[in-house]
Length: 232
Ligand code: CTP
Ligand code: MG
Image (cartoon, rainbow, N blue to C red; front, side):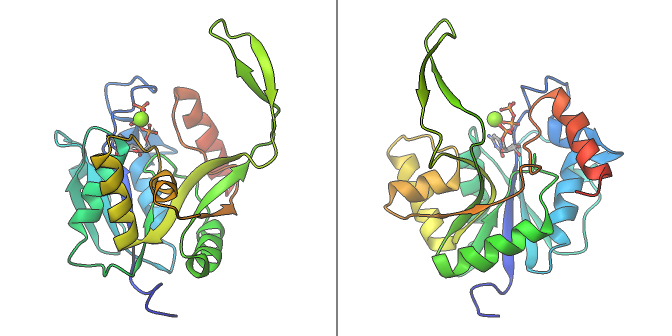
């Protein structure tokens, strides 16, 4: 162990509304195989031996959090913002007293309850020496460019195209600076790696399981339950 992987905190953005699921309750609080989705995600993260604490970022008007069963590691909360990047940055700012600039932090979507411990381990094993990394999956399907009528007008090269997953792993100080810079420039970054790329970093793509889905639509609940029940 080096000081870079001791006391690893994970920021968990959970301040979204789940509009594509379309329930009255935000998706992270809907039941998934008998427990709230968010609780399943927190349990997964807390079960990893390298994860020492969780910073869960909640919506300002969240009323469901007190009903969540918490895992047996430190769990703190912060209030998120309008976009995912705002919520992640709020969570990072709230960790200021706990994490040194040179320490690594993880960021993991609340909506990804099927992340495997082995993938988190590989992300740490490869990502710490690389200075920063993300779980990702290489594109398997042929990629089409559409026009405004949804007609296929070109076939894009699939080589060197990856889908970004989470967790993502970066040094605390570098990630805070990158997200603050993107915000100041008015650029909406959709993941941490995008903010880091803007600053000239080259985050390592660590291949992770395709089963690490982001629960996004009602049908994804059935898929995630199937995966969890299969022992994913
Ligand atoms: N998230 C957040 N703060 C926001 C928006 C999103 O913390 N302002 C979180 C979500 O709670 C989720 C993760 O970021 O865990 C990924 O976002 P997404 O899957 O898009 O969730 P929602 O934004 O809630 O869903 P939708 O886009 O369908 O409304
Ligand atoms: Mg969203």
